[in-house]
Image 1 (tube, rainbow, N blue to C red):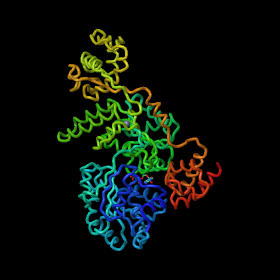
Image 2: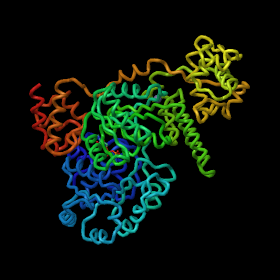
Image 3: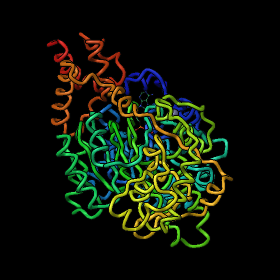
Amino acid sequence: MPSPLDILHSTFGYSEFRGRQAEVIDRVMAGANTLAVMPTGAGKSLCYQVPALALPGTCVVVSPLIALMHDQLRAAEAVGIRAATLTSVDTNQMETIERFKSGALDLLYVAPERASGGGFRDLLDRAPLALFAIDEAHCVSEWGHDFRPDYRLLRPLLDRFGHVPRLALTATADAHTRDDILAQLGIPDDGLILAGFDRPNIRYAMSPRQGTTKQVSDLVAATPGPGIVYVQSRAGTEKMAEALGAATGRPVRAYHAGLDPAVRARNQSAFVASEDMVMCATIAFGMGIDKPDVRFVAHAGLPKSIEAYYQETGRAGRDGDPSVAHLFWGADDFAKARQRLSEVQEDRLPGERARLAALGGLVETGGCRRAVLLRHFGESPPENCGNCDNCLSPPARTDLTQLAQKLLSAVYRTGQMFGVGHIEAVLTGQANEKVTKAGHDRLSVFGIAEGEEAALIKPVARALLLRDALGQTEHGGLELGPSARAILKGEASFEIAVPPKTVRQKRREQGAANPVGDPLFEALRTCRRDLAAEAGVPPYVIFHDSTLREIAAARPATLGELGRLSGVGARKLDAYGDAFLAVVRQY
Ligand code: ADP
Ligand code: ZN
């Protein structure tokens, strides 16, 4: 029987297990029930695929979405795993059942509603079983964000085949949800293997909005490869797509729940197959998309919570290559979110407030973004990650208590009804028509902002809004908020992080990991594109970018040399080796 490590080498072409994969696989091989909580991109699939190949019998994988199952099937077949799906849309169900019963399958993907039915139980009685893998296991918990009642019905089936080990897998589970999954699926407490939440290859950055379209198109222009831009409204996604297409020349599509289902499906599959498309989408887009080479995720507005932000940005960089998550936020996002709080039921109010405050802390911090994120998930990360905007260009912290007091006074003296532009005009002593007409040039606060202060009025107003020292009226005017008093009375000091002007430049320097423009690399990409089109799969199913980079750097001359590179397993070597060697030979 081949060992797990042999299988990792020969089937997947990888040299070593990553993170806690080896631990999970060892437990499964020893027949112990296990819950693996690992972030996106950590390589969860491998944790059941390797045992499925190493153990006699079939691994039954329970998965909640048909699209996800078909993606997984495609990737498994590409490395030579004998796999099948059993879903309502499959026309070869009889054949699959025969293969299953005769032991000719390593993996069988089924939906929970099928798995929990009586017919399936009878089928399992007559087939050799290696393992149950329960993917997206948070679906079993009402605490999770995606509860699926059918997952609850799996337990009797699992218990009926109590001698078959079970492996539950999920990327997102807080402590509550984890306990619930263990209890619901009959996994002992010491069966939990919890990897950290960190996604080290994702670079986090956040900027206040100032002409969002321009900011996003700068990001798109600086970042080659596929990307997602999350936009709050349906109409906004289409407008953004149009603007980005015009500004950058990149292929762009829109995706939201209001589109015709056929158009939506077409846009999604175009994105999955593409190597450079930008998808402008509402948060309806993403669940069930398993595209590993997404190079950036931009948010044109504030996400709902840190959890949502983590999940949405987590769609970047599953393949481990450098990726960017850039959030563009505005003080009005917070003002709107606060307004929505007034509609929230009493009992949910403290939770919702905390959620918003946590987001505020993340965007406003002058410290490491990753540290704030990871601490939110209960980890104790290092102070600096070296791969977020604030670590790369530390903002200076400045005490602006005096300016904050001036600004709050100006808001108060002008009657708590004017926008920040007017307040700025008053403070900097611009006697424009609106100012003189209102008589604001005669106020004591007229022209009291001095020198450098003028440029800081808008950032200070933003920070005051965030900290609830300013609020926004229905018409966008500024008014004093609950925490204004302490600042005005000098009881609370007011510091903000002033970002240096070099952030954008630094980001451009990062570039992509790919040697874009290198003729050999480009030729390898063309070869991959042709093979993908021929096989009817997305290019990344053939080889990941990292494998193409290795080929370009190592220039293998023989199948033996090619087979030693990461990501080149026996099956792919056999199927594509000659084609790629021919490309290398030409350069
Ligand atoms: P998850 O389901 O946890 O999001 P995947 O199973 O999709 O992650 O794996 C992410 C990527 O990492 C896949 O392309 C996979 O082939 C790759 N991968 C997994 N394990 C390893 C490993 N040990 N070495 C190199 N690459 C790996
Ligand atoms: Zn950092």
